[in-house]
Length: 293
Image (cartoon, rainbow, N blue to C red):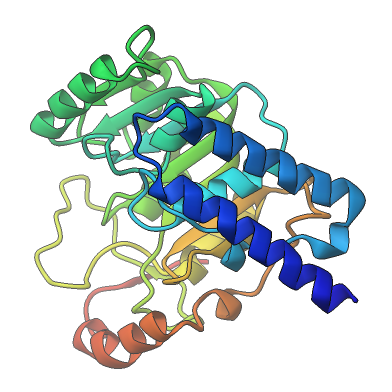
């Protein structure tokens, strides 16, 4: 019976997700469909918790690069938001990033950062013209983020203390920036990790405030490294998207019944991650990686 119920749940969820992905962003029914999906998840949590889906079953893309929009919607369906505040470091132009769907379709307050002035200008225009954000658009800051300035920049943007979401995608100093960031205390953290690295290696590129990757695949930090840092900061790994490199961490004590801790290896068993480790890791394994503890 449980197996049948799970198939029914997956079928219904997929029908709703298909409608969301097919809806043009200007349609008023897009946020309605997403909010209906959130209520559906909450109903399942109350009436049939055994029928709840795994993170691998709920992904979809509206503004995110891959399926992060769906995963975050699921997480915050079952994790009550504190203040609907999100911070995204390296948000590009805001039109393809992890927080935009929450900002546009769910009324979240955004604090976005990027080191490319042209992208920031484009992002400011995008939110200023959008009907759901023109009145109070997210705060978009042009800055090159370092471990030394990240706390001041985030605080100056207006984000402090407990917030709901932090998204990191720096393609380089992700480990060091999260380690340094103390001015905010997010419930959920999503960050890019480097899945070319074997799951048992906790390594990152050494800290360099001016780092720009010049060697393909020599950048960022492994999932094991980010997981060690997450535990030090009081988080647990709850899953990753289907390509294995964008990982999701939830604050200890928050929604543990719905999102238990998972093993690192379980997040990188997909064909893409296996290919990356097999074909790309040998090319950079002898670079100057720094072990973290």
